Length: 94
View 1 (cartoon, one colour):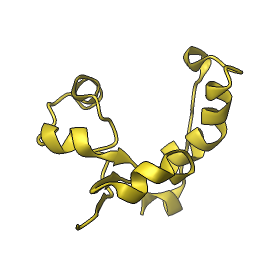
View 2: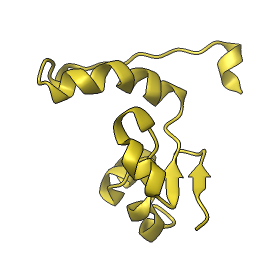
View 3: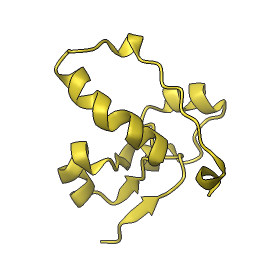
View 4: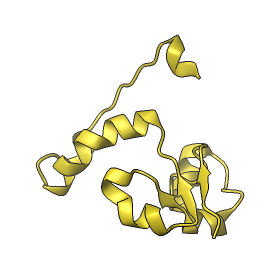
């Protein structure tokens, strides 16, 4: 089967209500959105390997999640206490 890696942010949030809350519009392909697998392989390797639609996480989410997810899973930090203030120079503009 064909694997699609979506480089936009359109399939990163699986919950359609959360998607609409963040983006201010309903998702245009909710059936596909439910099938998408978040492509951060460090934490989702098996699902990424077998999925049809992979949502590329992007550089900011990856940089934020790599150190935080293990701490959250261990209960070492509270998700409500996390603030990520990320900046990019001109090289980050693509």
